[in-house]
Length: 293
Length: 257
Image 1 (cartoon, each protein chain N blue to C red):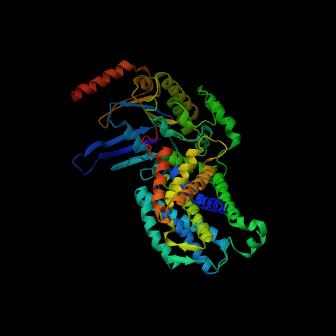
Image 2 (tube, chains in turn purple, cyan):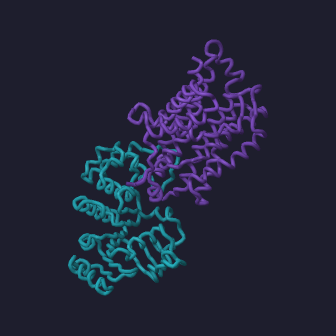
Image 3 (tube, rainbow over the protein chains, first blue to last red):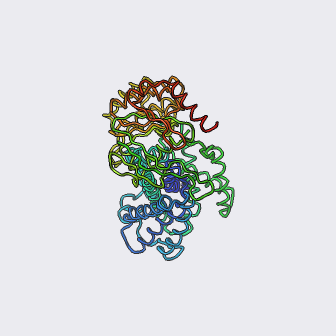
């Protein structure tokens, strides 16, 4: 039973990250590697705030904004300096490593003793007795659900429609008298905001900040998006964002199952092989050659 | 009114492949003009449209829109007053979005794209009414993704979308070239109707000589970056396809091919 709770918990936390990756990869058609830096950025900001005694609930909006700032930087590098999309992300990912280290002070910051969103007087009072063991899961579920619903609502606004248009046919955005560069920056900002939010929740669930927690985050995000969108593309009941969240849980379950048979140090190899299998099965590896045709 | 004044345009400047396209190129399209532009490949028709819209830079010269110099204005800002339809039907629509979403996007052109509702349900009937005039059955496919439509249907939508909001100028870049003859005919009739209804200043590049003769009140023939024929009014009305073909051949013989 415990293992299922852990898979769901972790799956949903990485699901928030996958929502961000969904925006860049599926909507903007922008392979954004900033994610590997903005995920620990959210964690670094959170660890720093919590060790300094700030109210843990404040870490959520602040981490989101920190991610937004990182996304804006990637966007500016890409749009204003005209650097290729992949390289812009790599530049920011590299830069963020130092920024995260500087923010947190060291590569490893434990926050066991402090209050956090999973462990404070208020939640301990609400989740007492039999609910206590599902406390973290319920809190993660609420945060993931709110993120999903707000993102869904946003994508239905005028600004959201324009965001979807820029990845689909950037030329049309120019025809609508809007600067496509600004729309891309906006998309990257929201995406990395969500990724940093996932980092914030992850850090508090693990009760520790780890500089290396972001390594491979993009792979987890992409795998979740591809699993979700290819599995549920014909099921109307789940829209894309719900599919992405479920995809993330499925991915975590696959990794957990694989770890039953292998050692923890095989983790990255398992991840890589799993990702390859997902890409092949999902048929998502084909580059859109004739994008407008 | 649209004006090009003393335009100088080089391709690959500063390299061995340097090629001069326009040297002191001038063109004025008066308000309400419907100008058809014909000419062989490489004569500068599309380059002229790209210069007008700001898609490519020029070495020298002025571009005036209603008397205002827009030479330094970015492409997307110029598009506030310009609607443009391309040869490729996919350029004017978003394939992964529905007809309703596409129409809603286009309907908001010139306004702020904020956090208001993207789709105004009250406008649905209005869009359907516009689409029903096309006689393509699109009005019953409001929730179908545009990517599932045929080229002709998409081009009709692109034309409708580019002229949905108040604009002054319509730029048509061989917009019937990728369509079958029957659909092309339909799109041309639709174009003519919209241009007349909204009194748009229109520049249409076409390879179809019949359309060039039949539609519009002015006809330009371009050759190697120059306007070699510019007729309007009754002279244009009396023009026949054969006359233009003759003129075309004349130019080709002069150039020795």
